[in-house]
Structure formats: structure tokens, C-alpha cells
Image 1 (cartoon, rainbow, N blue to C red):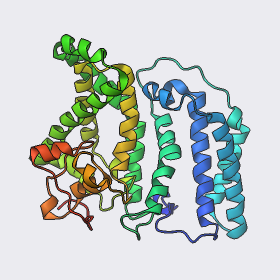
Image 2: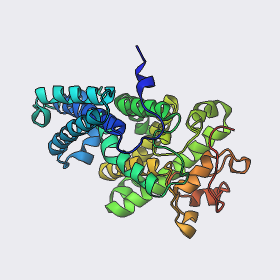
Image 3: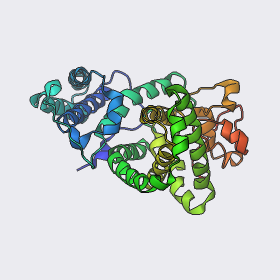
Image 4: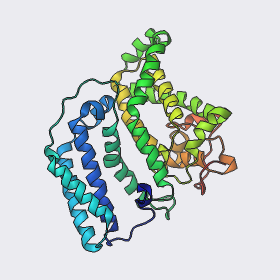
Length: 351
């Protein structure tokens, strides 16, 4: 039997031949099935901290639309190609979803749980974020010949799935560490002062504070040999796109999240502002890795763009250990690690 990862497509699709429709049918049916599971078992399959992001979305209407499209794409694919496993599996899975209620699936009662899988975060990222970034990359790509399903996309998708599903475990570990440390590491006077600041100024202050923390942690990953072995996983991606940023060692994921959450909690930023930042970093962290040609001109001296972060991943000797900031390139200028020539890099990966 052929392993599933070998069945998955790679490269480009020919428009109208039914192959892309078959895989769209399967993907939509799979996402529909996962959404139904998340609705039915919210206690163990959804992320409490992330529910604020999609609380007002018409989830059931979107689920109904996804199942309808899955059936439509599947039938079209079978009409075009008499033997297409993806379309067949998509139609079967969509049929199973409809048997179990489809968009009318009974919602489970959410209860507090220490351990859960971030299935909702995974679905949201694929349904709401991935299409936006893929369209951007196709409208104005840096590397025009790069396919959506480029080489090693399966590797990066594996990291994407693991990091999303493991968010519950990450939060348990980080929250435990923070709970033990923040008691003696908190500054009440600073916290009281921060809490009095309105939302927007506090959010901007949070970005500065987080990026300053992340800058030095990121720099440590590069300049410490043991930590570099961990961080090198992230730099091993030979192509840059919306999925490449997911290639992350699990140790680095835990260390970085713990450091950032500890810093935010210790200073005393409000929970509302922290929640806004969580949504912001999901978008911006993906955006700076995209294969999207975008420039801010002179403002790149202040803000990080895909071009600046592409150079951080470049193989060019002159770009090694440059551009550590995630949000504010101004920090790289201050600390002497800014590098931003007019052209884009040609090669990425570990030197």
C-alpha cells in the first residue's frame, strides 16, 4: 500500500483537468469533518484562549458551504478523470459528515480542561489565513516559478500540524513555568502603571517590549552553539512562503513562548491587549515568511517586512546573523544587525 505522504501532490496543477478539484474536494471534506469534531467535543479539541478570534464567525454556515463545495469539486473531478482517489475519498468523507449531521451537528458542552488539542486553531489557520497568503503570493511573488506545493511542503506541513495540535501542551508547560516564576518576577508598580494605559498605546508598548525580548532571545539562538542546533531547524527551509515559518523545533517553540508570555505577564499587560497581540503575531509571523513581494520603502528602517526577514533566512555570507527583530527593524539598526539591500535573496537555508 502506498504511504499517504507519497500520495499527496507536489508541483503545479493543470487548470481544468480535475486533479486540483479532486484534492480540493478531499481537503474541504477533511476540514469539515474536523470542524464537526471540534463542535461536538469542544472541551478537548478547542483552545480556550483562541475562541475570541472566531466567536462571531458563522461557523455552521461556513461548514455547510464547505460540504457543498466538497461534493461539487469531487463530482467535477470524477467527470474529468475517471480514476481520482482524492475526489473519491472527498465524496465519501463528505457523505459521512452529512450522515452525522453536517452543519447541524450537535454542539457539545465546553468544560474547563487542562489538556486539549488545538484543532480549532489548526482549522482557522488553514481556512482563514492560508488562502489569503496564497493569493498574495500568487498576485505578486518574489520567486515567480515557486509552486504552492513546492519541494518540502510536506515537511513544513508536518511541523504546521504538530505545532497547532500541540498548543494545549505548550500552554500547560508555559503556564506552569510562568505561575512558578511570575510571583517573584512581577513588578506591581510597573503593572499598575501599565494597566492605566488605554488599549492602543498599551498594544504598541507591548509590541516594543515583546520584540526587544524576542530580539535578544533570537540573537542568543544564533550565537550560542547549542541553541543554534535547535534553531537551525527553522533555518533549514530551502524555500520561503506562508508555510515555511512553521518549521520550528519543539524545544524552541516552548522556550520562545515561555519567554514572551513570562515577559508580558511580569510587566503586567492587560489580558485584552495580550489577546490582541496573540492574533496579531499569528498573522505577522506568517506574513514575514511569505513569498510575497512587498516593500515599505524608507519605513523598512522601522518595521520588519518579508524582504527584511527573507534576508535573515538567506544563505548569503553578508546576511548571516542579521535582522533578528520580528516586528521592529529599528532594533536591528540600534544594535548593529540591520541588513537590507535593494534586491531580494536567491537562496535560503543553513550555510
